[in-house]
Image (cartoon, rainbow, N blue to C red; front, side):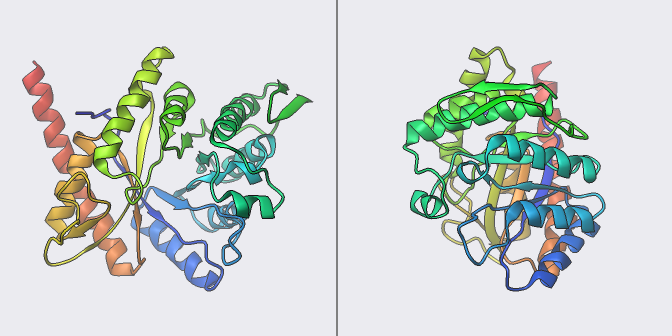
Length: 310
């Protein structure tokens, strides 16, 4: 059982498809107006039907007022870390501190290679991710870069501008060694329910927590962010979130509240990024009905546990 005590946050996974840019901006405005905390945007630069994620994020930050935006997650092999750090700091400063950085080691290697990027083996990808985190951290600290690694060189570069706030560096990783890296150096972990169901996240959280403690860190320093999909329906459907092996949530409003409460108080997730069809009624129901009920239920569970502990 894990509950890291973080405040609950709710976001939406916005499609970067090029077909209807006006609709993409409209959805961002709706999310901003409704009070969502976050917009997550996938980053697959080799996908010809997608806008460039970092450029799209800059555009949306310039068109919104309060919502934070992050790549869910940035494709490291096609985004050199020193430049990615500069992009992130620029977006954060220009938006008044509304950018967070989700980062992944890469996938779909043939497509990455087709764009001129490296095709890395798992151990190489993990090594590159570790080096990238080091470079990005140093860049945001304003430290002159002196990194000469197996994958990246940045020797004598003077970083800037500095971010407007302490940008969250959230790793989208799955394997045990990568999870240990998250525990050692990351501010957050970003899995997707469709790939990593709750039962698997329990094992993954244990690996992250052990690595964090081994690095002298409090596991609670690492926010757990969950990309979730599903639908609100009149009845609970098979595979719709009743079991910890399920990969989506399908059922009535109260079922969603119960599942998200369990994910927060048993599996340690505090940020939920909704994935699905962005109709205005669905977006409004999630943030104005489901989210407040989850906050209330989680607060009750936490209060009950605190009272029992003495």
